[in-house]
Length: 381
Ligand code: NDP
Ligand code: MG
Image (cartoon, rainbow, N blue to C red; front, side, top):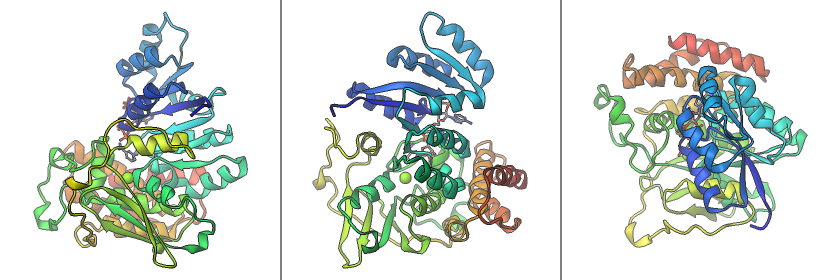
């Protein structure tokens, strides 16, 4: 890559954020112009000293004050709160924003970034789940691209390179590892603890997405994410359980050709590709050794046990505020589960109850989405 790439990383202290910085460490053409986190200022300080961004945004205002003192000997500007995050999203010196915050908190800064004409390397799937119609329309209006970081969507995107006519796409085959509880029935999942749900077989990710993977909520969110990214109907997206996480997803064409992207489970590839597309850069390690995977398996998802996937498909089909209700009920329920206030099965139950309690609003405004988010949280308690 000859050209410099200037990026702002929202959520730089998280799993995706730290791996993004690892890539920037390998490829100094990638310049870090802004970083942000919720409260982890110890890591933010280290990152600020190493990557010398112009701006650091901390959501927590008290922590921001502390960080300002710690970084007083540098030129780095520290900002705080929602407006600080927006500033990091819209910073002049960046051309691309990596959205790696978790949850619906990613929606507003992503909108700010698009309005400031930044390309988006999108990890924060909740942005498209809750505000897909707004975000994709804005991206069109401002002429910016949204490139997926999520491994499945990156695989789909890669499998669509060379497709000249989108009408040739028959369907998307979205793979899912199945999580730690694959093969289990509801009565075996009653007493699952946060520790058990946090053990993902193939990926090392942030807590929320790991719990969501175990309930198949994550796959549900990804179906809706794919709907918006690739402008495809929910019913043309087929979820397949693939335990090994080697085939990262596939595209089936009208002539039944199936094009897939394979690789070792390693988020650095989709992150890197989102930053360098259409170029590919060398990855030094973690080549896929096929002989270690003599068997790649594919199964139907068990939607009786993991019925949240069906709920997400419904939310995706019906649209409106329903996907926000689905997502925000899940965010609230996962938090309660982590605090041991509700059971593991209570997560999917809470989502179902929330979806049953609302009247849908078609084509919601940003304010209506944010209201729906609050309302879903009150329903979960
Ligand atoms: P993490 O929990 O590891 O990191 C989240 C980041 O967001 C941290 O930097 C955190 O700061 C910051 N943050 C949390 N809450 C807020 C808030 N309210 N306002 C501002 N910043 C906040 O998450 P992941 O990296 O795992 O996931 C990030 C996104 O990427 C999610 O949407 C997830 O679904 C998606 N994704 C993740 C994958 C992975 O491999 N991890 C794979 C595919 C998609 P602090 O450290 O201070 O808490
Ligand atoms: Mg994924």
